[in-house]
Length: 575
Image (cartoon, rainbow, N blue to C red; front, side, top):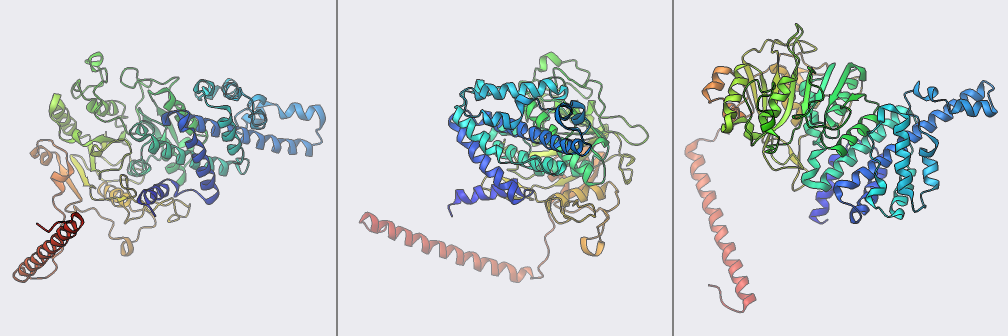
C-alpha cells in the first residue's frame, strides 16, 4: 500500500475510535461529498456548509420523532381530525421535551422535496433563519449564507440527498450521541484539510482529554475565553456524565472572536443539549471581555501562540496585568494573566484551577519583562504543574508546546475526593518522549481509548500504562488524591507519588528560584535512569568498539558497491 495511503488510514483511526460501523460509513460518505466542494469554495469554508446541513437535519428529525410520539399519544386518547393537527403544531409540546421547534418551511422533507430548484441555497438560508426566529436560544448563532457562497445547485442537492439517508429519529440520547461523534469526526477532518488554519477551531482530542482528566471538572463554572468549536466544553460535559454527574452540574462560559467559529461552537453544543453562555456575539477577549465579573472554578483553553498583534497599546493599564504588563509583541503572558484574573478565589473549599496550552517559550523567555512576570506568578504560588509535551501533536504549528496548570489554592480542599496541602510546591512532568506517530506528521497521546468499562458506569479512566494515564495519575498522586476504585496496587503499581528521573519531579519555590524561574521540566526531572545490564565495563567497551569497527567496515563495502554500480551505469570505471 502506498505510504500516503497508509498515513491517511492511520489518521482515520485517530478520528474514528469512538464510532460504530454505521456512523463511520455515514461520516466517510459525507466527507467525500464535502471534499467534492473543494473546487467550489475554500477548505476553510466548506465545513460550515456541511455542518450547517447536518444540524438542520438533526433538529428536523428530532422534531419529527417527537411529532410522531405526540400523534400516537393523542390518537390513543381519541383525539383526531383538526384538533389533532392543531395540537401537533403546539410548540409547548416540544419545548417540554427540550426539542427545538422547527417551522414547516425548515423541515427536512420540505427542503429535500425542493432540492432540485435553482434557488435551493436561498431556501436553506430562509430555513435556518426560520429556526433561529422560532428558537430564541439559537438566534444569530447558525450559519445562513448558503446563497452567498455560490455553490452549484446540483452540488447542494447531492449533499442534501446524502444527508437525508442519515437517521436521527431513534432513541433521543442515542441520536444525539451519534451526531456528536459524526460532528467531532468532521471537525477533525476539516482541521486536517485546512492545515495551519484548522487550529483556530480544533484542539487535538488527546490534548483536550489530558487537560480535562487533570483538572477533573466535576461541578462548577467552566470557562474558555478562546473556545474555538467548544471542544473543551464537550469533553468536560462527558467527564461529568461519565462520573455519575449531570450536565447541570457545570455552568459553561466562553468567548470566541471569529464569527464563523463562534457559530460552529453554538451548533456543537446545541446538538448535545449543552447550555452555554458564549456571549451575545463573537468578541475579542482582550479588547471586549464578555464575562468581566466571572470567577471560574475551571479554566481550560488553547489560546493562539505568540500572537504579536493583540492591541497591547490599548490595554497598557488593564486591571488584568496584576503581575506585570505583557510585552507589546507577544500575547502569551496576556493570556496567562487573563486566566489568572478569572480564577475563583479561595472560599474555604478551595479556589479556581486552570489548565491551558502554551508555547514552550513561555517557560523561559525573559524578553519584554516576561521573566519578571513569570517570577511573580511563581512567587505567588500559583503554578501547580508544568507538562512539556512531545512534538507534532498539533495540526496548526510545529512550535514546541507545553501545558500550564495554575491554582488559587493548593490546600487540596477543591479536590472532590480530597488531597494534600502542597503549598510552595510545583510538579514538573517531561512528556516529550511520549506519544506515537499516527502519520508522518501527526503524533497522538494514547489513553486506552475510548471510554471503555473499567468503571461500573461504563466510563474508563485512562489506562494506567497509557500516555495520558501516566501523566494524569502522576499528577493525582502528587496532589494526594485517593486512587480510582479499580486501581489495584498488585496490578497497577503502588498508588503513591515519587520523583521519577527523566519524567517527573516535585520542586519548591526555592528550587525554582535556583533555576532563575525558568520552568522547563527538563531542567528539573534530570536524565532518565538507565538500568544496569550487569556487563562489566572492561568487557562492554571492547565489545562495542568491535561492533563499531564492523559497522564502519560494512559501510565502506556498501559504499564501494554503490560506486561500482554508478560507474557501470555511466559507462566509466569506479573512482
